[in-house]
Length: 215
Image (cartoon, rainbow, N blue to C red; front, side, top):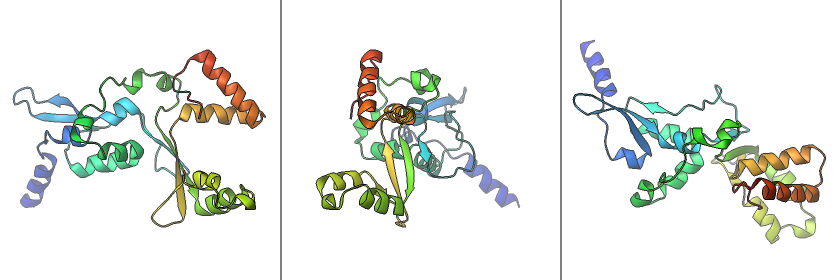
């Protein structure tokens, strides 16, 4: 029994590795007053980007908006959180050089201080999880005229979807959620696609919101 308790205590007290700050996008939030040892670290993606909204998948519990804090420093904890809550940005971040990672959050505004946070809209990506039959049959086949099957337009549309390992579902990432939500609301009010385009451009011009890119 004594050996089991000692093993658990050692696991909880795994010393923090300074190199993990850059590798896993972390920020020290607490140090021991006497020794200076790290006692807690924070997820920088949570602080500056918010959490990704994954639609089409059931969650065990409601997604929190609080920054993730770790007091137990295990690499698998960081990877699990990033993969589940910041998957798109995490994949992008991992591909960067060490210098690019060090500068990744420079001049960025913390998410809690942004307009999207106060208005309840995430400023990060939205990921839709869609059944393979919908993508392949409805979007791939029915949405396009048979003469256009295999054409550039159809290929570009289908390239937006990424198949999972099992091949039973696809994911598509919306990189501009504010634009997406506006267009959906406009269409929901009965506007045609052409009217939506015109109203969207007016909205962009009058508000001056830089994130409303017209693509």
